[in-house]
Image 1 (cartoon, rainbow, N blue to C red):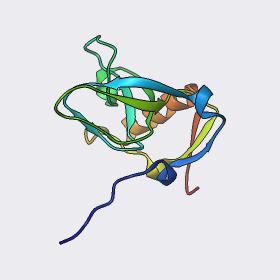
Image 2: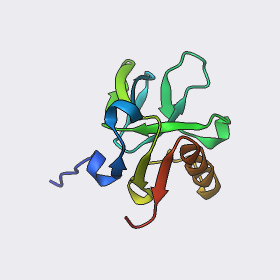
Image 3: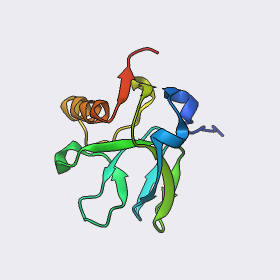
Image 4: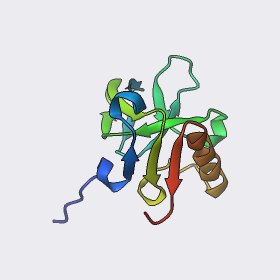
Amino acid sequence: MALTEGNYPGDWLIEEFSPQHCREEVTIKSGEDLVSGQVVAVDVGGDGSYVAFEDDTDTPAAGILVDAVDASGAAKKGVIIARGPVTVGKAGLTWAAANDATDITNGLADLLALGIVAREGV
C-alpha cells in the first residue's frame, strides 16, 4: 500500500514578512477540498467564500491557502496568504486543473499585485 503525503507550507513558502500582516482567515466554500499551496479566489457566487482560482471566471487570484482545508461536506474556515511581502516557490503552488499556462501566468500576475512574488527553482 502506497502512502501519499500532502503539501505543507514548507513546500512552497520561502519568506513571509509577518504572519499577522500577510495572512487572513477566510471561509472556504462548501464542496471545495483544497491543499496547502492552492491558489484561491473569491467565489463568483457573491457570498464572499473562497474557491480554487480559475482564470476563466474572470475573478483574480486572491491569495494562497496556508494549510489544507477539506470543505467537501460544508464550508470551513481556512487561512490564506492575502498580501505580501511574501516570496513563494512556483513549483510548490497548486492550480485548478482547468487552468492552462496562460491562466497560471495571469494568476501569478494577480498574486504579484498583492505583493506575493513567485520564484522559479527556489
